[in-house]
Image 1 (tube, rainbow, N blue to C red):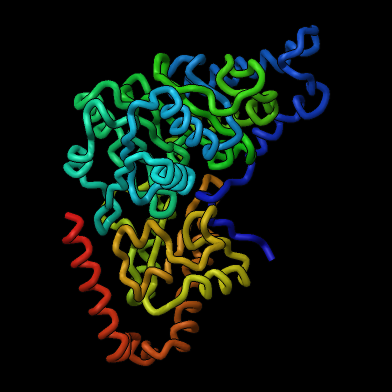
Image 2 (cartoon, rainbow, N blue to C red):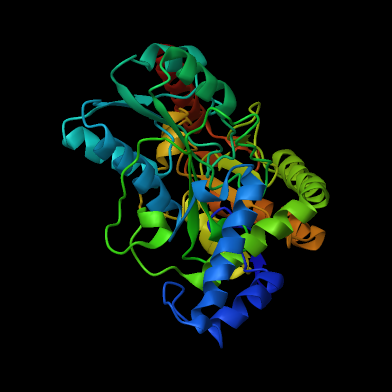
Length: 418
């Protein structure tokens, strides 16, 4: 059975061109780039060229690029490195919908005695800019960490505006953004629109490079101390022998993304919109999480009332369709998504969420297969629900009462947050 892979926000297939670029450094060019002999100069030169490529993509200086093992390391380096550099500042601002690689670090800071504001989002997953402004504390706030795009819903945050506001409030506050889901999909201009961002994280395996390589943009002059101590690698900013083939692969993947962005983006958007439109039309009581907000072109997150997401995923998998119920880092949990809970998704649907995330390799035929499969799966599962009337294609009276209760609870929660 062929696999229909629609979980690209979790990881992507490694592009053939990336594999080709990596192979020499997995075979005959295996030398340690820090060694002094002639044979090691090739790998050292490859790292320098890759650093320049990543810098060109981000519109920054090569020396401002720090290679890491993944975005999780990049995020930890940004946050922990900043607090080590300025321990006198004890306040951090983030959001309730960050990836666990940021959220769990901030929870750790709370346990260590730091003051962290976890800002709420509205029903479409958007941040209240006024609440953000009120959270900033001149002279006290160490760091602002807000993701560029949410990994579950694809909702985009106005990072350029938030960074500008932060610097106007207090130039000493560092601005970090997790751009794991936007690198390779959207332009990232750290000299232009994002010129007020101090730290930016990305990961290779979200953009058709292999797992195990990432990068951190560290603006020159930003006070951040090393997170991994050891050797002199990365100009003394990260100990550990560089992963040469994977660094080369990351750079090649960014080159490919830049070359194909316009064409890929238009086609992927059309496929996502086709999937969204047909599922909305064919499945009653289905909501699009993040509808009405600016979203990534490749991401569709739906919540299906009166159905468990686990059951849908199991039956999709039996048909060779790969999707997810949220972040790959938390999908093993039976708890509902923290992102959807923060958005106030009704309890009749919060467990019935599915995320479809497309890539340049997604085909129209694959999208049509999902359009045909999911309505049948939902109908079969709803027949087992005591709250659903399949004949009427609507909730039974007791299900309707549950739904009204859930909607009212959502309204009250969001009203309290605003």
